[in-house]
Image (cartoon, rainbow, N blue to C red; front, side, top):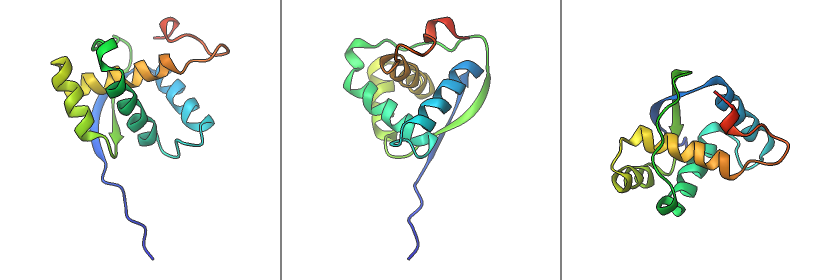
Length: 115
């Protein structure tokens, strides 16, 4: 039996190293995130559920562009971009940062102190 490969959609985001490290730590600690795209799919789903309380965020100056992928939520991401009237990459960035902030715990460094 061959496993069906996920159909990934790539986006180029500018995420500073501290936030990228946070994403990697969250993925390592959370068994629901086997792959990094699982994190981004969850972030997009969370943002879609909370879109009326979020505003699109701009990239920080620090950091370089890297490719990130989503698997199952490309349609939701396109809807978020349309709802917020912003680029899809900006909607994905907003989803990822918002999801991290919403799921911060007391022993982590607040994202406001990063990058």
